Image (tube, rainbow, N blue to C red; front, side):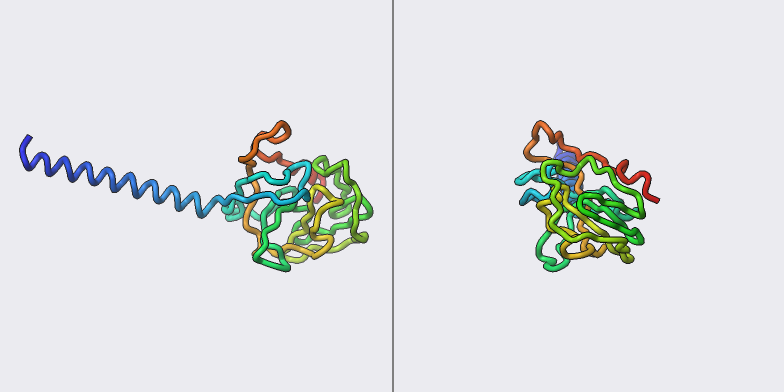
Length: 192
């Protein structure tokens, strides 16, 4: 093999390395922009999510469509944007929500919430009657209703505070948690 051929081979080899490194960096950037991990700290989302679990949040989930009822979201706490919370969306902009004891209704439709912690049905907050969710706002609640600081206590979550949609639990895998979070949109199927 001559000197010219070796030089060509080295250039091809360097080009392949550069292309591979560039592709890996682009993939890492794309992952960083669209996904974020989140650590569950507390019991407010029991039995769906458990204390000390780690989840992935899809930050690009709402680029083409808005957040929907039933979605579990991670957001900046409205009273302290340095803190991130995780809750389930119960009502979206324009909805009327009522909560009397343990009964939740959206636009007059009573919700039959299969994801709520049946072991702690206590509602420590006063009744809410026909509260209208404002534009670009969301009413959120924890699945563990007796142990959740949520919209019942501090109000709506502005759209700009939403970081993304929780999609998968990646640590630890457990008997009642196989990774993907269940789709609970059926609970809201009869709401207008």
